[in-house]
Every structure is written in structure tokens, then in C-alpha cells.
Image (cartoon, rainbow, N blue to C red; front, side, top):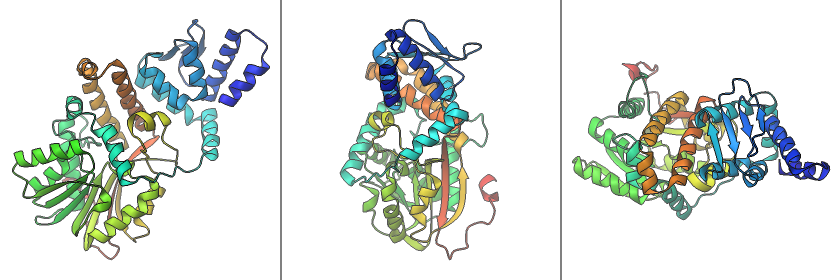
Length: 409
């Protein structure tokens, strides 16, 4: 877009306002003509102006030129700083933008852009992984406690009935995972990336398994150990502040929920090797993660402000975990719309506590996280993102149920 801006600026012999209005029109068309409008600081509007549900107002010239040059970075920055404002709802606006990018002219632009980009190559070493985790997860337990469920489960919930509370849906998710894994009392479970420990605690309490749970976030591990002591489960669970690559020993079950997004595609084969050397001959495992349809690099705004080095793989890329070590995929389930519902619960609670959060941080922080939560919802509702649960086992085994009846009884 920046190259076009420069060419048009040089070609058109007109006042600056005429150039800017022309470039706004061009920008709107390159977005795929979304069902939204865009308004400049002088009141000029571009877009579908009859029955338009949402409008983006650009409050100054600097924000406009930044938006044209690097929209995937500067939209987030300038929205967070108040130089862009949206009428009609941030979520509704983002859904219209995401839909327009996957249809018609917007789809063609998106395909051409993807052809020009190389597959992202993230090689995330231990120190960098710990620094990345600190950036996001060590923001503060008090912050997350305001808008997550009571057990602070920060991954997609499961809604067997749509009217469940977020607490009920997170419990249902953990039960869903345990049933898929067919956990048996006395088994050993390794969990890679355990968050604040809710799933480990659930497995030990309700299924009588022994758990070794790994996480590089100091704040999360500290809270998880505190909870294990309070619930009398310290003898059943060992929370270890370390990287998944350093997992040692043997387990009957390997589970990872919401960690793969931080691993990086260059490390998938290594993750598969860790699972292979730790899982017994009769073992099975489950990986639960956000994914995408095409290998598109994570937006620079998300990389800079939310998830450094985060990347959501395609299903094909995920096979680098399983194929080299000859694991069989026993079951694959997509919970995409469950994650949209989960995020909506989080957003509602976030907005209920926005004044407290602003006091803890500032208004820019509130706007930044609102954008992150709304953008995530829009990605799932419009189908850009998926949520997979992949159940796998050794290829020679045939001891898992042959139907899904056991999941829904």
C-alpha cells in the first residue's frame, strides 16, 4: 500500500485534501469494500453510507498516513492511543473488515499478499520463550482474575449447552479432555504449558492421576503451586517452572492445551520428539490449540504488544509434530465457535471491570486489550481462526473407543 501511496502522491497535481480523499477511496476498495464507512478528520466519508452499521473516524492526518503505510501495525497502535475511534461497535466493525478480506476483491488481494510472503520461521529458544511468556502471562494475576473464570482457565471453553456460565463451560472443557484421553486412576500425565494449573488440578482430583506440569511463567507456576497446596493435591501434582523441551521421565498421557501457539513451527518436530521419548508404548495424548486456514504470519501489532513470537499453525503444519514420529491421529475436533463464545464471556467481564483495569494500568491499556479480545472474537466468528483438539496415540494401538458416545453421556 505504501508504494501506491507514494506513486499517487507524485502523480496527482491536486491539493492535499483531494489526494487524501482519493487514497481513502483506494484504501476502502483494497479492503474489499466492507459494509462500513471511513471518515476523515474534515468530515469526508468513504464507504457504504446507507444503513451502515459501523464507522471508523480518523482523527488526524498523521493517523491516516500511518494507517495507509502499515495498517496491520498502526491500526492497533492508533486505536489504543485514541487517534482512531469507531462508532457502531468495535466487534461489528472488525467482523465486517475480516469478512470483506475473504470475499471478492478483498480475497484476491489477500491471496496475492500471501504469495509474496514467506512462511514464518520462528526459532524460539528457552530464554526467548520465557521472556515471551513474561510479556503476556506475567502482566499480573490480579488483572486476569478480573475477567477469567474462577479457576483462571485462559483457553477455549466447551459449551454443550449455549446458556452455560463461563465457569460451567470451562469445567465442561476439562471433563471433555479427560474423557477423550480415557484417563485412569494411577496413570502419569505430563502437561506442557499448564497455565494457572486448573486442568492439572482437575485431572488429579477427579481422575486420580499423577501429574507433572511444565510452564515457563513464574507468576502462573507460583499460583498453581499455591492452589495445589490449598486443595491438598501437592502429593499428586508437581508444578515445574521449566520449558517443555526439558521434560524428563515417562508418562502414560501427554497433554498440551493452549501452548502450541508459542512453540513456533520450526520447533514442531522437536516437540514431537519430546512426546515420543516421554510417552510409553501404550500412551496417548491430546493437543488443543488455535489454528488458521492458511500459513499467514501473525500481525505485527499482535507480535509487538500481545504475543511476541506467537504463531497459529495450519492443520498441515501441525502434522510436523506427529508424522516424523509416526503417531496416529485418533480424533480431531474443531471448537471454533466455542472459542468465540468463550471470548465473548471474557469481553463482557473485561468491560465490567474496565475502570479497575484503567486504574491498574491506563486507558491505552484498556483499549489495547479490548481490541485484542474483539479481534479474536471476529477471527473466530468469520472463520479466519479455528480451535483444534487433536487426540493421538501410537499407531499399533486399538484401545480407544471406536465411537464418540463416551464423550456425550
